[in-house]
Image (cartoon, rainbow, N blue to C red; front, side, top):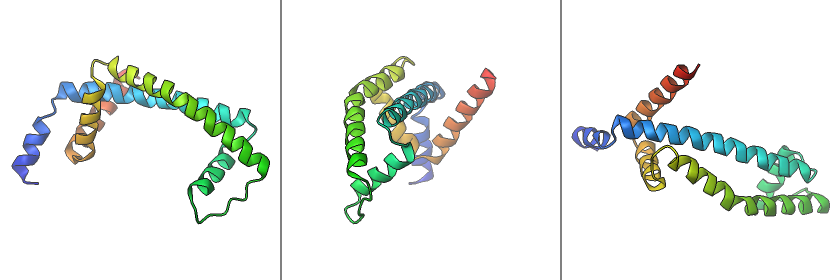
Length: 138
């Protein structure tokens, strides 16, 4: 990409937009943490350790890997997977709502995320905004 094209692309994203994205991103991170805690609780309620669940999950995903999970563990893993899949739509709705609560649409959030992912200078600007906001809070 030419320098001019890079500068033009960078100017596509205003500080205001980047600020909204930073707010939305932070909200999504918090929502993801809540979701992870729910998933951990589901795994533990089913009687598995998170590490063990992940081992079984990896073995299930890898056709070349023989799972050493017992029948009971496989059943628990299946129950957890089902419960997590049932939670998915609710978790997605909450994530979208948390994004939109910051004044940015989900579509804009996704398109900005894609731009940021492909642009080092945008990543640095975003990081600076997030760091500044965290230091303002403390």
